[in-house]
Length: 161
Image 1: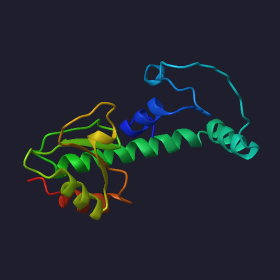
Image 2: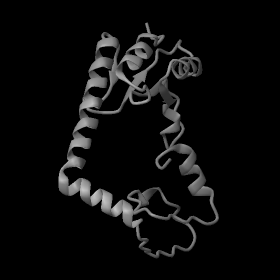
Image 3: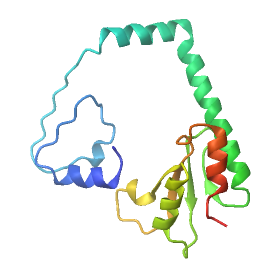
């Protein structure tokens, strides 16, 4: 996953880096030593996918899909706000994740294990940091639960109080 510490470390230590199908915007995170050769290549997407996406765009289906996804994300954030009332966390109103800072006495590994067992996807901030970070922050995915009822049950089980 681009932007994570393990990927950054792998990129900085690799002998050869091939980046296919990307216009990688983070050139400042690429190695600065060695010879750099750039070559652009264009690959053709499958014709059926082009036809399908074109139909979705022209017919307005794509707009409806995007709106439905946004509305679901907003609903899930509202649910999180309800169950995390009084708990400090960071999130965007229409985001798919939230960031929670655990108290220092809380074992982050145990917390993450509990969260995963109860149907939520979560990870520590070290998975998203380029530099070494000693923090108790965790990112919880609100989209991992199949529906809002499952999300509510999982949020209710969070051991944060």
